[in-house]
Length: 430
Image (cartoon, rainbow, N blue to C red; front, side):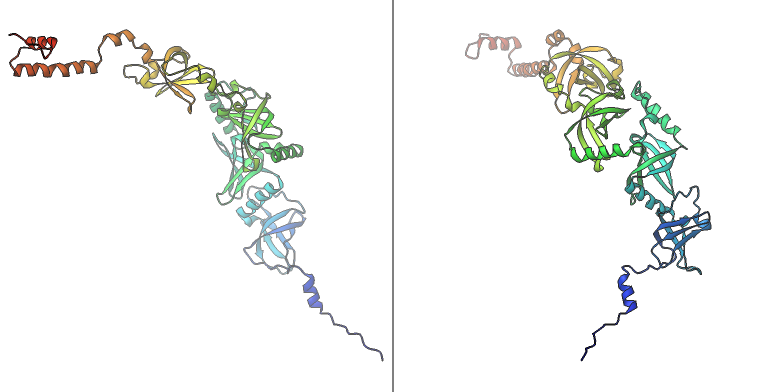
């Protein structure tokens, strides 16, 4: 007798539900969602937003105030839901109403995918330029991240004052201009976006080299590079694809006021990495740490009380800075300029003039000497010939009580003096 095979009847609905990993989403007005552009024409954009039907952006909802749509098929965009479903079964969407949310989305996308962004300069200050991003957002391009050729002369500058004045003028000229930049930092909580104009010119090969250098270097490593820019606050150096800043305090052991006095653009240079922050976005270099520190050898030649020659390099309200030799500077405090009250140090000493000075202190922490001019000008002979105030006072204090005691005992001062000369045991005959 033949047996009938045991079969299970399938459930089409259950099979469909099992085959669907994610249920089609439903939408309601006010939601902001991400979609992928499927097609574009002059009057509408169709998007896939993961719903039961396609989404559509049409008419004025495609327009942006003061901005142009720059999308292509396949791009991801942020959209605002106007209606969950229209009579044609489509989800009505708007790009115009996404506001700042769309801009934050685009900025994050640009950062993640290393894309260029166009911004307009609307303000300038000594630290950089403020730019309009669109959608009510603003960003900042620091001076250090602007193209060097825009703001710094190739040959440096004559003085720091000239540099500051020229920099302010160059930055002001950028107002109203469009910059193509890359996003280097986003902090939505602080409403802060930082851009770099320098990094937008970096090709893939240079980016790969920079990334490779970042992987293998550590603070303390030495690299060979080239001066790429000169600013009032230091030197820009590109070392093995990794651009960083040598602050003016790290250029030389000697005092640096104008970095252009030491290097020019294109000069080869060896640097030591002294700081890497934000994943390599900010790199600090030092040049002077690869040079022998002259301080230890120099300071062995000097001691407190020694007379030295020094050239006044700068006059300030509290005294004058003096250069003793390369790598060794000192300060004549205003109180050490003269025995007289000094209100204006410039009336006692002159810049670029040399003076004989006396060392009154040696500071290892500040790496300079405390100097005195008044101790050199003071006459040693007059000091020896004129008794000090303390000695004169001491003599009066000692003599006066003796005179008063002699008067009380009826002894004349002359007899008291004679008694002192003969001694207490000798008899005095009246």
